[in-house]
Amino acid sequence: MANINRERLAASFIELCEIDSPSREEGQISKRLQEIFAELGAEEIYEDNSTDATGAECGNLIVRFAGSGEKKGEEGFFLSCHMDTVEPGKGVKVVRNGDIFTSAGDTILGGDDKSGIAAIIEMFFMLKESGADHPPIEIILTVCEELGLVGATHLETEKIETPFGYALDSSGIDQVVIGAPAASKFTITVTGKSAHAGLAPEKGVSALQIAAKALGRLAVGRLDEESTRNFGVVEGGVAFNIVPETVVIHGELRSHSEEKFAAYTEEIHQAFADAIKEWQQEEGYEGSFEPFYEFEELGCYPALRLDATSPVIRRIAQAADSVAKKLDYIVAGGGSDANILFGKGLPTAIVATGMNKVHTTEEELDYNDLVSLVELLYSLATL
Ligand SMILES: [Zn+2]
Image (cartoon, rainbow, N blue to C red; front, side):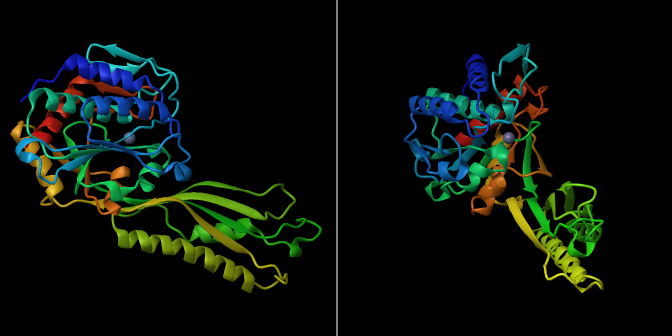
């Protein structure tokens, strides 16, 4: 195996973390990554046309490296990471304490997902130095992942030539996520009619009563072994003596089964439609106004499910074997760009990068984990 240049890897990781890139402000890091991959010999660097849809400063990047030597004609694979970070992500300063990297404490570190990107860069340095044969490899770098997989949703996947790949974007190390739930975030708005609650209550339709009736019929929490549902925020009404005209409910649904996901979504529609119908049939309501509800999906992605015998899992299993690593294959509770890519016909396993305590100012990365990820990637490339 070629040698990992540990100091170079640490330096790239720190450099990337210290280029601020909160969601939609990925312009600067995109520019720097294009420079780095051009120097490393990328055959093509393509920035897609997703900015109108995402509102980001730049598009997603697809970077293509041609195969070399005897593996030139093979199908290859892609590696994907997201360029954006959560807040607080401005003015990141990396602190290195022995092998542990953290931020200075007032921001996130950004190892989510710059640990993955730094590992990819080091892998390409090693391929260049060793001259080892490798198949074509593409890198997908998305924007706005943290806003709900927005960049991946608008990615021009038809530009991707390799048949499967790996999203380097998960906590822990030596873990591969092979299943993640379908999920949606949604807003339900119930509209009734306002009226003075004391002087003319019969002229009003309480959106709150309708919403309460509907919500009362919907189970929340763990719906079955594969599914969860939550209504997290309820807003509405304007004063104690006014019949509430509008109630807005924010919720989410997750399921590892696409069928159950569809059924639980339908159940929500049914509950609100029924609550409205019953209100209209209730004695005493003589108004001509018809209450109604609107269901707006703010983000939705399909379930990810990969078979142990699929080429994407077989390749990484072999890569791990050849460097004597033991990988755990797990099912996760959250989604990532991999769900979107999988939904668009590109099987994608999620690989742990060593990032930890992500989305907090205590985020950290153990350098040895990052080194271990590079070993795995190099093996994946040179198999
Ligand atoms: Zn991430």
